[in-house]
Amino acid sequence: MNIKKNIALSDSGFVFDPSSGDSFSTNPIGLEIIKLLKNGKSADEIKKHVTSAYMIDENSFEKDFYDFVNMLQKLKIAEGEDKK
Amino acid sequence: MKKLQYERPVITRLNTGVTNKFGTKTAFTPVTHVDGNAVKTLIANYGSPLFVISEQTIRKTFKDANRAFTTRYPKVQFAWSYKTNYINAVCNVFHQEGSWAEVVSGFEYHKALNNDVPGSKIIFNGPDKTEADLRLAIENNSLIHIDHLDELYLIKELAVEMNKKPRVAIRVNMDTGVYPIWDRFGFNYENGQAWDAINKIMLNDKMELVGLHAHIGTFMLSPNAYGIAASKLSELALSIKKKYKKNIQYLDLGGGFASKNTLKGSYLQGVDTSPTFDQYAEAISTAILNAGFIEDELPLLILESGRSLIDEAGTLLGTVISNKRLSDGRRATIMDFGVNILFTSFWYDHKISPAQDFSQYTEDAVLYGPLCMNIDVIRENCTLPPLKRDDHVVVHTVGAYNMTQWMQFIAMRPAVIMIDMDEKPHIIRRRETLSTIESVEMMPEYLKKFKL
Image (tube, rainbow over all chains, first blue to last red; front, side):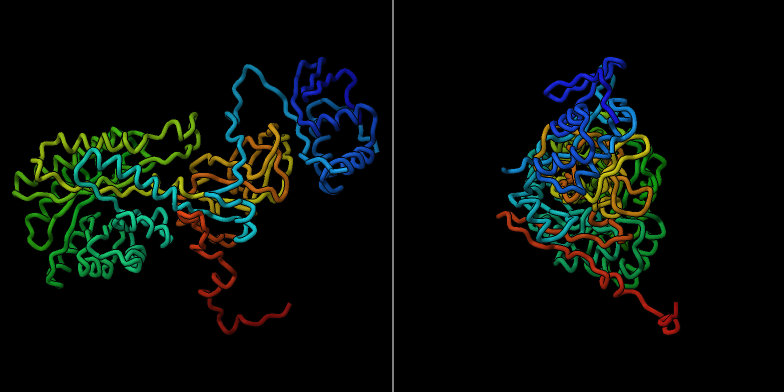
């Protein structure tokens, strides 16, 4: 799964899709995940990064991560299969 | 290295220029304490969910209401509506403030007696008063508000048999410009039923007609309707004076004042639309004072307000069980309280606040209760920060009707605590247990054993 190449991200969490004109708002952790996905990181790498930086256990994060990724796909910010 | 505070990742589409169907943001300040007690500590000590009653808020609200009426009308008496919340500790706060008791069943009547309310200060309303209830009420010289003719004739018979003169009033229903008219209780004003019933009582020496009662509806957003009701009751009282030379001792305008909750489907918040006590008091007092009573003969004004006096004093603390995503992409959050204990979520869009700090990011969500029933929806849409499992929330303005209409369904009913004037919590109703329910069940001998 990849973040679409033309998606624009601002540091404040504003996300813009120039192909559809849609704009979105995400929180700091959401922005961090989108950036990591954009840099080609895998789900495992992201999990490792987040659980070492934040007060959250692996299982809880995994649940939130897949929900978030589903939303990215639903909102057409991400496309393709999940990168294992 | 110290780890950072985690918040669930959220992303929402921004819509400009169109109305957000989820409405405006509800609350952005976490409510971490209730009357000086930390939500976390209360839940740790008494379990979740937990109803919390604020004694400070009850007394303050009562004083506000009392002040609104007593500054406008010389003789005012409140009677606490038991059905709104009949936990004894709650009733007694109102009795300490000077409220009489207003009951609508034998069960509630006995509750008031057990709380040491003198029988003569119990107002007995409602369509279902058994013969035994009426005997007791007559014996105690209570104020019996007659709902229908069968009751009127039964009281007449009992009066003869007991050789007592019961103190009665009739309940009058009427057109106050608010529809549908509540015409199922009492006798109608416009078609003459009420006047007929009055004549039946006055022409018979067995009962004493001491008052006239009306309860025009519930969650009434129009103070003017009370003005009309007060005028019509006054007119009846003055007609009785003219025909029978008898002064009616009191006019009882019932209850039905709105609380600050937001009714489902309402565009504006309840805090902005519900009338104040002053507005109700102004409409009622003006109507009675202008009706034509001689100053010395002004009747006592009785008010049976329930909801508006207790709703804001009640808070429900709860905990998040889980989050999930619905098939259409909406977020769903499952709470540990449902319609079984929060009956009023059928009527209101309750204001719900998170009980811990969070960032400014929010998400629209459906709030479900824990029941395995499709109807268990607390809020169909609600904007809240990204809550996670075990986070706590505070549901506001739940003091009225929940602790009487709650159901023991699927789960047990939670504990209720009252936080006193010194911010000290007291349990006023214990959490139910399996034995609470099973203590009234019986098992026939032949069903005691089985093999699987």
